[in-house]
Length: 200
Image (cartoon, rainbow, N blue to C red; front, side, top):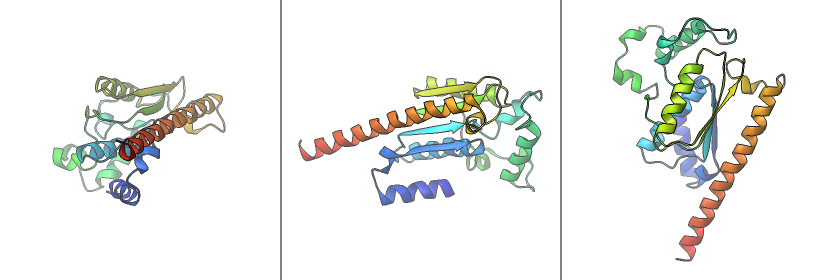
């Protein structure tokens, strides 16, 4: 509800803000961006120029299909399940959640048509890597322009550790370049619209 309300406020303040807006979220914050994008499209709101997702949770259900073996000591399956329990509430039993209840807090699987360009990072040692790869393929099949930048042998949200890892620094440099390209596309799009409006 908060991210939806904030997006509404931004559009009310400036109807063209989406043309110079790049979203970013990591882990469960990445899942929030996926949820928000699905809401934006289903409500016919303007989409941002692009979104960066660092090790995003595809949804709340994918944890149930994860192999318990993982070499990622930073983000374990036990921690993920405990965090999911906090999201749904300690008095709620996960396997009794209805589809309607779940739709209010978790993105729908395979509903990516209309998404803006995405830059996704994920470590090959994290518990979510297979789910993120699967989600990325579904996005591509839906016509989404998406980059999956995998950190070989690295953990959950590896790209945020650029102060300590050269591979993370390289990922940040590529993301910086990608942001510039997406914002330039947004500026050119606004210029073309303005020109068409003032000079039919």
